[in-house]
Amino acid sequence: MKKCVFLLLTFFALSSCNNDDLQTSAVESEIVQTDPLTARQINDKINETTKTKGRFSWNESSSHFLWSGIFQGNKIASIGFGNSKDDFDRSKSSNNEAIQNEILEVIEKYEGKKDRILLASDEYLNQIDVYIEKQETVIALRKLKSIRYFEPADYRYFENENKLSGAAAKSSSSSGCGLESTALSSVDYTTVSPNAKAPWSFAKHNITSAWNYSTGAGITIGLIDSGVSFNQGLLSGSFNNGLSSGRTISKNGVYVDSIWPWSSGYDGADDKCGHGTSMASAMAAPRNNMGQPVGVAYNANLISYRAASNVVLDGYHEQEGVKKAFTVLGNNTSVKIISMSMGHIFSVGKIEDGVKYAYSKGKLIFCAGGTSTSFTTFVGVIFPAWMPETQAITGVKENTSNQKCDVCHSGSEIDFTYQMERSSGNNIPVLSYYNAQTDYVGGSSVATASTAGIAALVWSKNPSWTRDQVLNKMRQSATYYPTKNADYGYGNINVLQAVQ
Image (cartoon, rainbow, N blue to C red; front, side, top):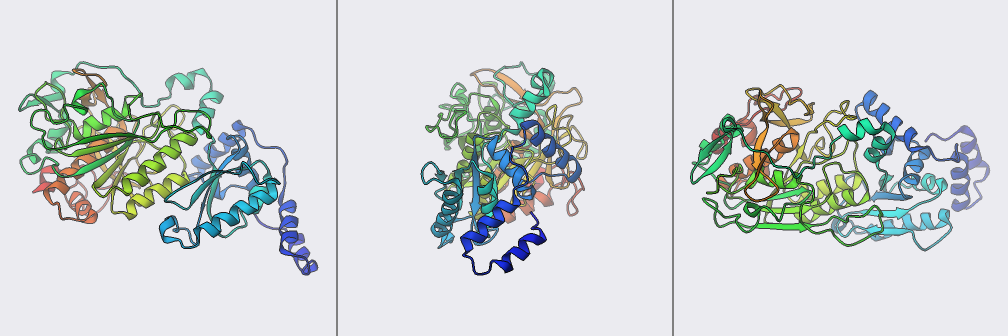
């Protein structure tokens, strides 16, 4: 926020005063409004900014707007700090404790208390969550050069939008969840040995032919989603059924199922939504003998993390869970690839830190470009897919590379596309939540999971390659190489070409 001339004159007139007095004077002079904005006012501003500028950022908002978001979100803020904008890794910051203490001291001063200030301090990242009630505290903290970002940690944009938009929006918006099953049409798959159903999209990308060269063996994919069903045997004890062998699946949970940010205790690894199970199936379901759908990389290892309740990363525990999943997968040396088909319409600092941390460890990261709900049709590529550290994936219609699926997003940040919508409207056949059941899944979500499976095939064929070598081979085998399409990146990948 710009300072008025009066503040500049005050500085020279009171040059003999101590720094605390000056800072307090400046903070008090910056306060414009004393009442926080309503959730309606906050959401309207977020929507307006997104529509006119393409993106919304808390960092570019006024102190009053930021404070309002914190106030309306259980009075909890997330702060990223460091010596520069890229100083996110605690292990590489010798003075991170001193900076953190400086921030806490400012909060103590303006909040007028020493207890119930720090909610959480990340083990690997220069990031903390704190309790803040006063606008003066927000203004004072924003003057610190050591703060990289400062955001509400529990402002629920989507929840508020649902409430404020009425019953119609509630019924038509989507969390990506569903435990139902659907019988597959015979035109949507082919049967491959020993008795598995290969989705129609595999032929479009030459995946079944690519299996003659690579099956994903030796590569571990990390899946960040809503978990993987314990009721689906082919993603549990029968993960090595049929022609899938010698591999492992590990299910983990880093999500706290509570509306209260201060609650603790993870909710376990089991999928209670269904979305994560579909993604696991698309990328790595076994080449089974049970007449069920097979995944792209049917011999790859899989490590899943239940990090959120659904695909919309709204609220403290979902954003915290995703951040933790990225950092723990980043630290797992066996993991080569990370896939996440979840996101938000604006950036979340702690998740951005988590992505950067995993990327710094050499991981190849795929994120969904976005699938529309009733009130986000104006949004382009979503976060974190727009980050340069990720590969943004979207879904396109059958036999095209530049016609997005009916609910998919597109934009300049897209890196690859995957054919996942038939002219009939059917999507990709996958394993259902329960044994011996099947389903269809669509959107940029399944496009992302499938592309992560493709990356596993390429890396398995060339195990000594680096992330960049794998990525370059994928690009060279895609529709638009060497020049990206303005909205669809390099387009569809010819997987047979990518593994030869």
